[in-house]
Image: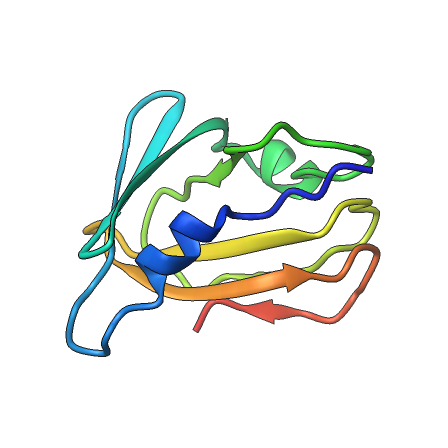
Length: 119
């Protein structure tokens, strides 16, 4: 089973000094992360309806490298996710409405029902 993990380069970008933010820019099917260590681009599926957000990445046994899902909400809100029925480990990035990466949750455990708080 292929792990859906960020590359070492992306982790290096996000391993930043507290005063230096990482930013994400988005287009219809792409997210680019930028920080002092460089940048990395991901192909994403957009989940912008309640049904799409509820299903998320459940029941998938693999995901291509540098791929993911972008959960889009109509307005900024507190977000909590879980891994129920998600078969692959995931890294989750929580991004605010201005594109600043607020939090990274590394290696979420498949099938775990514990809430993952975006902060």
